[in-house]
Image (cartoon, rainbow, N blue to C red; front, side, top):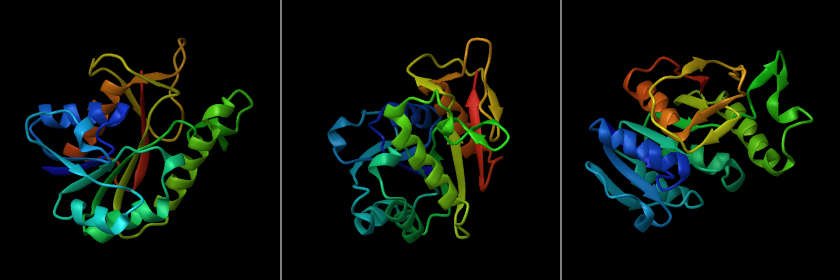
Length: 202
């Protein structure tokens, strides 16, 4: 597949880029500073700015799928989703957050007293982004939420999938960037959550 990855130089984005490249996907890796993008097989680095949606749409045009891996607190859902729609690409994958996951029916993780204040704006942005996607009728979107702890680690290929409920174990709730990337690329290759959110964790 020919995939465009917005935010390809970030923590999650760089792991997704590596996974796509390793599986033979042709990738346009997009960042504000293309020099920060890793040099990998089948990868072309490109400049793109989520605050310049018309120009970004031109970079995105002609791909089979688009992935965005950007901070919600630093992006405008209207602009970013608008750029994706303007590109004419129908499949859209979003690196989500854990804050929008439920810990009990109707109770979101972001709204619990223990949720760190420093991450609240980002998590609330993720909630709003997901809610906006749910109103979109012109995109086959998928929103993948990580577990509570989303951290550098190993690519094990062993994890669990869920829907809207935070995945936990006796050791807490976590997923590595590397295994998150595996789950996301699995979904791209074999879509099972079209117009849905799902989650991945150990």
